[in-house]
Image (tube, rainbow, N blue to C red):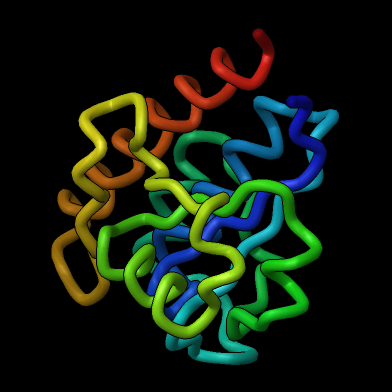
Length: 145
């Protein structure tokens, strides 16, 4: 199956999912990639620490605006990548029609989830950035096969 659209999901849509969205979109230019949160801080920009780490590694996030996940969003994307097991469970509980196409973002890098760096150290944000980038590179390889 050829994937043409991916929705990346985390909690607030201000740290992990926007970074995952931007990295995956850069690695897979033929795929429409967007992001949302299960408890989004709607209308907020990306977290300052996450934005700084992303910018230091060439990932532009300044125009990001947090969005709340909706049924329409889920139905309009072919693949949903959740940052943590609890996000996948939430989708299964509230949007069961999308559960079958929902996987963890780090599916090919351990499949355990990526820890939330929100309100944690700059070093934690950097570690999470690299985890997300590594997982996105694994998805690029899988999706290009």
